[in-house]
Image (cartoon, rainbow, N blue to C red; front, top):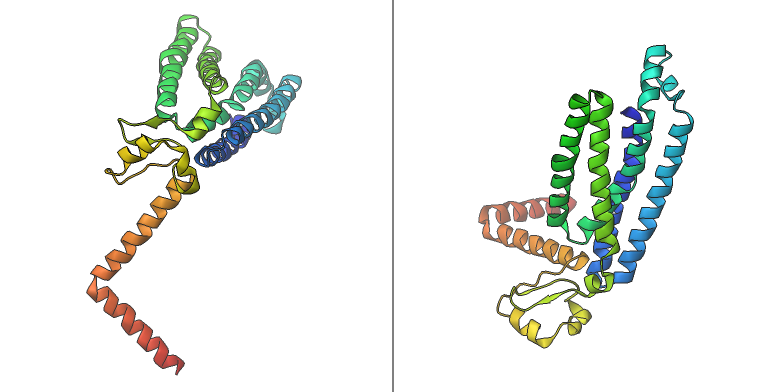
Length: 250
């Protein structure tokens, strides 16, 4: 488990980086850039996972020498090494695909996939193999690997079938008054006038990616300044501090 945790830090870094990159590319209307970032990050993480998979499969009987020289522990680790190898291999691609899904705005779909994969497939399979087939830790771990494999397969299918051009340019909804994709600045002309007209009464446009983040940050700054202006005692303290500083400089 320690080795798995060490190696897991690499896919988690790809998870965070890929999610941010895909979200920024889609927010800028660059579907090809989001697709390119997905392919590069997935292949890079998969190659790293394959390297560790080959390393563990080749050194399965000597892996535990990093921690101990006990023959009992070496034999136990040798029996579980194959599960560790496939766990690392699956975990090298699954977090990256999850990052792509999060950056693309598929959080609700991914939540259902995670729940179904782990609690409807992984846990029952682990209980079945661990207790009914009397495989113990080997069966429980194998069941969880099965759940991870199903989750990875579903996320891979979702990513492969994704229309990145459509995701980048957005899907216009006139009924919900929401436009996904770039709708600010010079890119607003891509949105039909009918959709723009439906958005004006609402006074709020939800743009994905960096444009939406900047708008939220600007709103927080404006609200903070207005809050300070509404607190007379705070304004007096700030003014008194300024006058005292000027007097010390003089």
